Figure 1 (tube, chains in turn purple, yellow):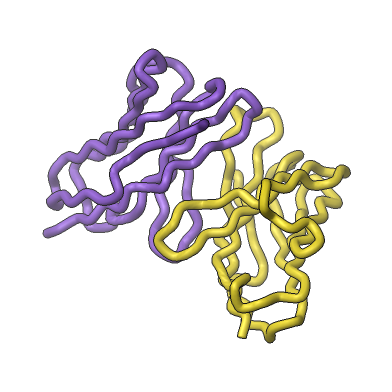
Figure 2: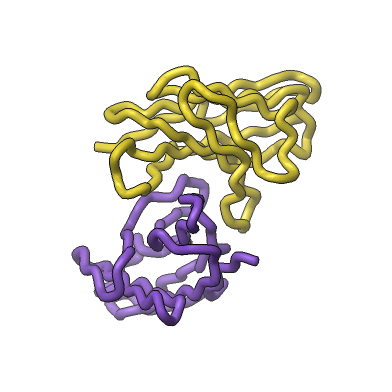
Length: 109
Length: 116
């Protein structure tokens, strides 16, 4: 079966760095996406990785290792507005997105 | 760019009535649109995939006669919840895939449906 695993909840301090991990087992791989979702709102696109390595975009970076079926989202200089759920999604061989359950990130002052 | 709108944002209807939700890609053409539902504190659940000009593909367990999807143009898809029941109360979100892009999906703001 297809499976995406990510921690249910994480807590971090304002100004700090946090890494949210995602492991996956899917039928085929056509890229991995990270989305941010604030409570009661729709997800917003953060990043896309299809090749191994690190993609940096401002305070957010995303890493992919296809051989390990592993990705992480790194958030630096955390701000209170970063409190949200972070969704990992993998595009399988049929170009369908397989979604993880999301990681709720709580930022404390 | 890549803005998706959804209307209405909130709707309350009585049990047994039908509700139509519109999803529009405002500044791009979307050959494929997706409809999701999300229950509180749960992840997105894909309901169906719609391609412009063809019938929607429904996920297992989703009743196609209850959730009618129409994708009449490259910028508009509609979801109609027919004979709504309280258990259909949920957050419905559409997304659109940019034609020619790298398959990222851009989401509408969602519609909160409450069936009384």
